[in-house]
Image (cartoon, rainbow, N blue to C red):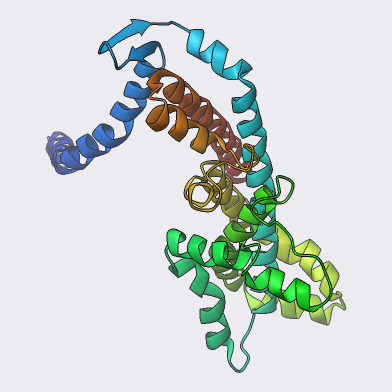
Length: 296
């Protein structure tokens, strides 16, 4: 009898928690599942705003998008942007985390200085860097001229434009990687490093055999978060180059924006969005599988 009463209490308690969480769950479903479903629905149609009609296209949008040379170019640019920015940010962030490990005089001031770029609005940052990159009055070209070098078309040279935008992203988001990696580094007990030092292990061996293996999950987490964020980069491209010059900085998200809000090809824009979702989902699944293997 007591077991039945205990079971009923558990059921009532569980039901109460589910009822409390239901409104939040409904909001999450409305803000995530419904938009995704709507995008999938739109990808199978072609919209005509002049006649206010839509025509079922099936998988035609998917076929046309994947063979579109501009989409292919934007996809390659996105991969380059994501790979270079992510690994640069994680690498520099890890270097700074190791550099700032422990206590030294003025550490707090230096940390505030490093973190500062992450606290500024992206559009403000883009305005600052666009001025620095200016061919005629920019500070960077002014420095180059004063040391006897030719000015560089940072945002107007097709070979330089994409990497110029990447530099802005690295400057803004390296502090994010630094914060997470330093937090992970600070969780490692100092006794481990002291024991390694007593055993005569060099700094290189301690780093490669102790520090990095222990921090692997944090490193992978930062790589995942920055890969997702850089893969959907839009604001920097829009503010600095608008996809130019000559589509040299066209990314997938900017392609979606242009197709959807400039040409009003909502079906094509939705299809390109699905391709982005598929790539990000694959990256996330690979990360989750790796974490589950380690925990298992």
